[in-house]
Picture 1 (cartoon, rainbow, N blue to C red):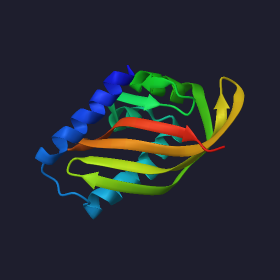
Picture 2: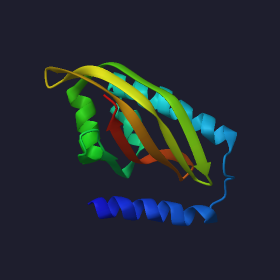
Picture 3: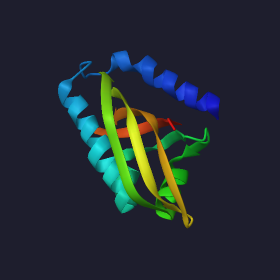
Length: 146
C-alpha cells in the first residue's frame, strides 16, 4: 500500500512538466488556500459529505497523525462518525508546479468521536491535482505536533 502511495506521487511529479499551467501561479495559490480553509475545514465541521466527495479524488490516500493509511471512504466514514466542534487550518503555504499544488500548514481540531472527546494539533501536507478542470486532493500527510 505504501508503495502505491509513493508510486502515485512519482507519477504526479513525473507528469507535471507536460501540463499547461505556469508554476507558482498566484491565482492557483489563492484558490488552494481557499479550498483548504473554507471548503475543506467548513465541510468537515458541517459533515458536508457531498463537498468532501468532490474535493477528495477517488484514489485519495491519507496518512493520518497516528501513521494509519486511510482511503477516501475511510475518511468520509470518519467525518460522518465525528462531531467536530472546532477546526482551524492556518500558516498555509502553497507551492505550485503546473497542475499540481502542495499545501503545507498547521491544523487544530477538537470534537467528539464515538462519544469520546478528542483534540489534536499538527502539521499537514496536502497534494492537490487539477483534474478535469477541478482541484482535488490526491494525498494528505498529517503529523502531530503535541
